[in-house]
Length: 463
Image 1 (cartoon, rainbow, N blue to C red):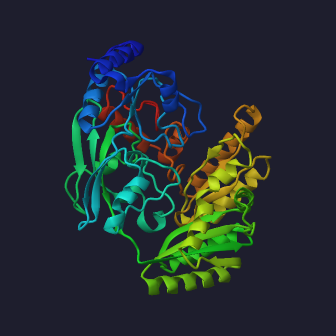
Image 2 (image 1 turned 90 degrees about the horizontal axis):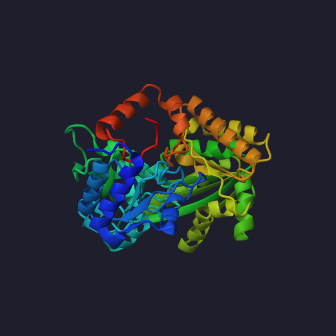
């Protein structure tokens, strides 16, 4: 039975949860603020309470109570989402799953593992170190694997290993009425029934709460080589990317930064790299293959007009190169201290990457906006960090206009509004243009699985 008054339903749910979980249900302002004002350019939206949970069974109990009272449920992992997925615009209960941080099983021979949703991806790799295996999705943030599955996350290694879409084998999910289901499994392929696993991967907690994830693992490569290549312009850099991908090299990462981003990196790190469009490249595999491919990539870059090619001779030099890349966002923010900005994440077919960047750069150049570019050139995904003061109405309007224009350009080129950050609240307005009639099918699935509309309401699309 569902309460007709949403506020009364939330308060009734809070009382019921408090009776069951005691002090693990918090109404403290500071705790609510921590869960309703996170790593996002969007305004804060606090839940009415925060519940800390530790097992699938507890999540099931809590969801059952919220379902009974019609109280919104917002899954929360590490709070690193960019597009407001963990905000609570309709109030409700934030389910903090960060305590569900156990690695449940590692099947080294089969190269897979099972983890609770709150395991941080860096911590999983520390746990796996002695096995010679690793989980390849590499994000800049300390994100949880449940959150990464929910947003279909990717990162710098997607060009070789794929995103969470390719690496999740199975899930344990608590449904909106509290039922627990298990999807997929440990088999590497299956033709059995609907692919429910990938219905929940990328659903951003709107269809259920992911509590356990079964993941593919990989053997650590024997050898690696990193290179840093600077070019006269972005067109030359991106043409090098296309040539390298077509040459079937053992590319694990191929990252791109524009001139402004390189200026920010030098200023932040005290480095003296060429302030020109730059590629970071990592090649992995057997030692002979890596040596061959690194030489070939250097030749390809020079053929594309590279002005500077630097090869890391050892592990320490490679770490230095990649540390600059991983700290790029902090370097950008140092251009305007105290400003977060909008981090865009469109993705286009790789052949259209130069055109997409050129078109949006021409639009930005008409404004006074600071917007460094950095991205995952190997899969056509890039970020512009649109630096603006949210207290300045004019700057805010310009930044939003540039963001909208970028998405329009990407969609026209056969791309997507979001390559890795997800939809949440920030990208909702672009879903109709991208999906058309398919968006209505998504709504039908949502209504069928969550008729009360309690699971992360107000995200991805409006009812």
